[in-house]
Length: 304
Image (tube, rainbow, N blue to C red):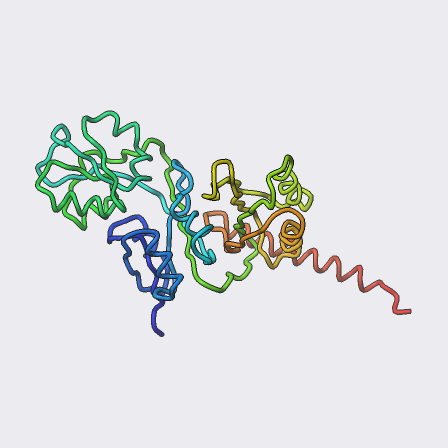
């Protein structure tokens, strides 16, 4: 069986490359930018794209979420979370006090602001951490890159300082996106939607959130994004527990769409993490018990 082609933010050695290696039966294709990944999936050049969505330190990756919200009609089908360790890398022979410029992806630079302020070097953005490593390796200047250890190995760089991120426990959540299908329910799922207000009036957001609260649906993320149509115009990106096949979730989305906002559905997909499998088992057992309970009640209904 031919492998599906999945695009990621390249070149090789990026954290996206590390994340895409965790997917099975996929052919990884490096792309120059997040926009290129999204476009290639949208036009059918690639079957899948794997993109960074959220970092534990810096928050949402705007290029990914805005591309999904405004530019393309794609669906999130899976998430992958990987730890992020950032290192200051340079060519062999370059010392820390010689570094004049540090290159990296904008989010990586933001994740180590404190360290970068402590050294006497200018900072320059690149399209990815591995692109930064590639440029440093190709230059004769005393430059350095903030990138992964894998990128250093690939491009022949050595660490000047290890673990330069500002906070421990740094992680990035990547999402796999496709064109059409919705991932099946597993019992421990997450749904992502975008709510566009029909009109800006007091209490609209409160009313939206009330729909979730009334149905005991747990919101895990709420973020406003500018609609790009003018100052003060925003939409809301919401993530919550549950799958669109769940009756309570479907009822909530239909209620929102009918009365409060235009909804763009971005996908229902399995939650990842160490506790995800245990949680799915707990939900399956609870549903089985509830089903047996209701069946026992229905069995007592008289036929006449």
